[in-house]
Figure 1 (tube, rainbow, N blue to C red):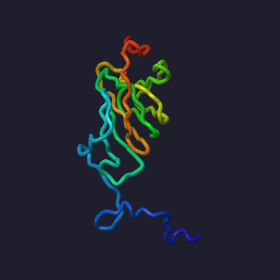
Figure 2: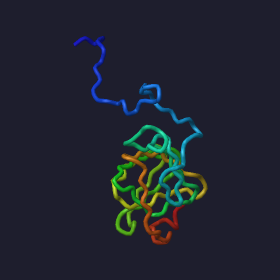
Figure 3: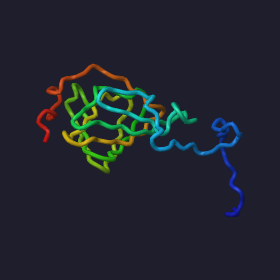
Figure 4: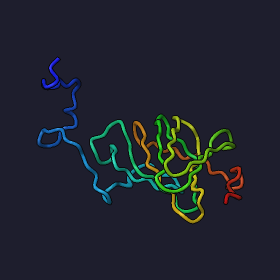
Length: 160
């Protein structure tokens, strides 16, 4: 096989062609992301790559932030697999029956949340915001669930 030979491409990506007929990368400039995406109280999501404003059909990639001390309402992401990266801050995710269990994360940690898993995303820091980079497939599905009291979340009220 000649390493200098033209590569033969498999598959058809013509559905991503722009008005000129060319298939090109689509850039979302900083500050021009969209907030037109699934939301839940206590978490603000902006979309960088998604069906809402790019030709993407099978991925949602964005930034999720929680203000100091905030936590999301219980929710799940339907059929979507979720990957997260803690960009800034300290995070906690409550899960399990009645949200009895949790995992804590800090800057540089990655997390996978399986489809249909009810959870609560929390900012452990009472003084600084928390910022995640999050990727979901196929889209940013957000199914908000019934609220739970802060006191019902183990170790939430007495966190440092």
